[in-house]
Picture 1: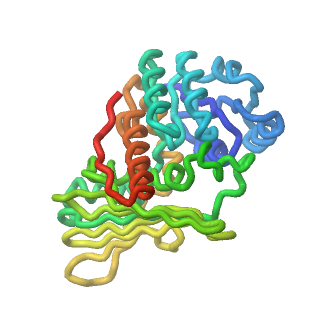
Picture 2: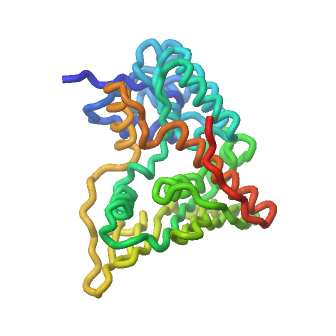
Length: 329
């Protein structure tokens, strides 16, 4: 039996907690410890999850087979470069970086060091989206005619130093939230011809609404943003096929519902009881342990999604559609 991958966690915030929670009881990987955060934050998360904390990242790297980068976006490049230089595979939270140049440097650093880089686009591993991907691939419900994804929450005033509210550090709701559905659209349908977007902004409210153009394919739309006060987090989609409508609502009791052509009661498909964080770490651990590339969501995927949301932002600023081409490194 293969030993579990020792996964070091860079960070001590919300996403570090999500990754540590996902590692509980996972047979493929275990937490090697936490680092790259303030002393108080490291002490708190160390006690909460029963894992060692290291003041110096190099100490954690020495005890890890791979690293999960769960830091604020503006620190992703430095953390990835440090891990790659130590010969450690990297699972990096989305967005991969704030801009394409940084994302390319991260990909190149990992290639030069001979290590793997995976972008943590968790929707690709979320049960309701796994169901959708299989439906689109299999043709079970006919051709896809429409996809409309959405993701909204209260403005993230909880982030350390409010870094998420500073566009220069987080990219705002487009880069932090919209990128989820932009990546899913790329995953489902491939590169669109163009992005056409509009944004709204008011005191305590920011949102972006995009259509990704497929002249000979489905209507593909996505919305994301931060709303007032304590607005609850919600994500979901509506996917229209020739013979069914599939809807996902994260806030519903039955999160996934299928309405089939011909009538009858809607179906609530049985889904694996897991989440995208757990499954992406399982996948990454298997790739790292077996010496294979994480093709399902590699660094190139992270770069492609980043370019698409950057195009959407540019469209919202100029009022014109922005053509899209897959980036290369």
